[in-house]
Image (cartoon, rainbow, N blue to C red):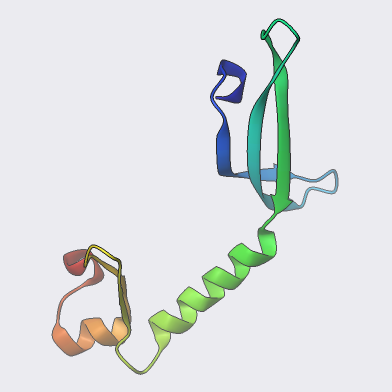
Length: 98
């Protein structure tokens, strides 16, 4: 998109290292232009978020397996988190409440 003149912010994508290790990168890209304003490339700034994503997955597992009903609601009142205990307690599946 940046090559078409549209800046991208917080775009997540996988990146493979030379050693074959998969990293998750958060990228912000902006169009690079010459003096005449013509697009000549892209400048990207990336951040390795592999560790953060792993922590978020672990956090989700802990919530889902907790022995207490746990749910989350966004600012519009939509259920965004619904763990297994909440499902067993009230009988509604995650798909039914989200």
